[in-house]
Every structure is written in C-alpha cells, then in structure tokens.
Image (tube, rainbow, N blue to C red; front, side):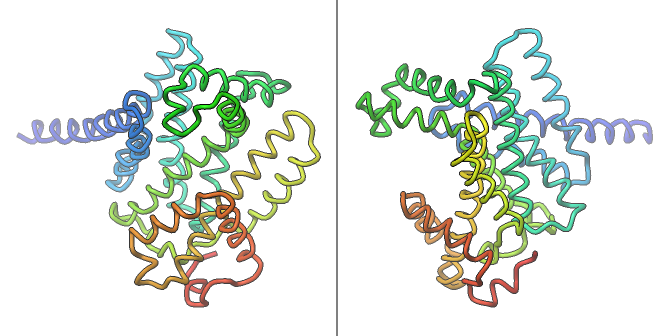
Length: 314
C-alpha cells in the first residue's frame, strides 16, 4: 500500500508540471491559431507555469520540456517562422515566469520588475531581428518586411482603417521599424496581467495598489540614452535607441496612468471600468505622451497625493 501511494504521489508530482506546460503551450498557440482574440488568450501563457511556483514546485519542470520540444522541432524542420515561434514562447511564457521566480528572492519594487521584464524583451527582440536580417540592414529591412506583409493582407488592414495603399505603407513601415518595441510592450502587457493575479496565487508580490505604482528610479537614464541615440546615432544604433526610447515611454505611460487613477481616488481609481476608460483615452496620440510625461515628471517632482507615494516601495 505504501509503495502504491508513493507511486501515485510521484505520478501526481510529474503530471502537474506536464499539464501546466501543455496548458501554457495551448494558450500561447492561440496567438497563431485564433484570429484577433488569440493575442489576448496568449497573455495567459505564463499563468499555469507561475501556478507551479505557487505550489512550491520548480517552474522549469513545466516549461523546460516544452522548450526542448519546440527547439527540437526547429532543428528538425528548419524554418525562420518556427524559430520565431520558439523565441515568442520564450518571451511570452518563460521569461515572465522566470522574472517572477527571481522577484521572489529580490527586494525589487514593482516598477523595477516591470522595467526588467520589458527591457529584457526589448533586448531579445532586437537581438533576434539583428541576427536574422544582419545588424547593418535591420533598420531598413524590418519596415520593408512589414510593408510586404501588410500588402499581402489588405483585408486585415482594412479592418484597422488602412485601406489606402500610401497610408498602409506608411503605417506598416513605422510598425516594422518599431518591431522590438511592439514585442516588448506585448510582454509588458503579459506582465501587468500576471502582476494582478499574483496575490490570488499566494505571492507576496503584487499586493500593493496600482495607484501606488512608481517607475524604476534608473529609468530616466534609458530615456536620455534612447533620446540622444535616436537623434544622433546612425543606422542600426539609431534604430536600437529609438526602440529603447519607445519602451521607456511605455513604462512611463503606466506610471502616468497610475497618477491619474490616484487623483480619481480609491473609489473611482479602483474601478475596472474607470481604469479601462482611462487607458483607452490614454492610448490616443498625443494624449499618450501626456501620460508618459506625467510619469517622467513624477520621478523628479511629486505629483501624486502623498498617501499613494508613501505607500509605494522604492
């Protein structure tokens, strides 16, 4: 009887991480298999893996075998798209999970953790793009690739109001140039969703109110380096700096959103619908830059009610 019980416990311990890995992979697969809403489903990819951490089991047992299978498939059937899919799983599911695992051992503020998560994704996306297209050509090739893809999917483009060819090419070129930034803010979205679920899983992290969110204190350095590099650096270095600057502004956008919600007070600022309205308003240009400017300014001059700033950790 004891032997049977021991085998059952071993089977349960093995099947838990295996199932978590399968569910995580299914969530991630929706990004490619389910139109439109697949991008939202894929945001859930790290949750089964992080749940393994909450249960006291190593998350590597859940995602390690998945990554080995995906990498093996990429070697057996060489394809640039398959390689990019493997990199995507690493960024969307594995990297957020690893960051939470490290965060458990480090006294990081939420702002520092989110900056590390986002800028880590920017660095990987930039490196992969440069490796595929060549460092000397990546800044020119990425916009051209996006334009060709958009022209081949004009029906999809029309859904976003990009029916005219000139407008389509201009927007596609800009999106292609900012590909590392787009990857990084998607991973940042994964992180924000994950952060909101951490208390439900029993983690000490994520229990502070979003109204108290402050940016990483070293983030202004990224703003300066990215801004100067974008203006003065040539070629690929300018491309790299422009994407860094965009990532830093996105992080400050989150900070600025927290400031606005803090002024709305706990009652309104904690409402899901009010938060959604503030974010939807904020993503409009040029309002997005106003949000980011508030976040940047709050790093030097206190803009929020003192009770919220005092409640945040540094």
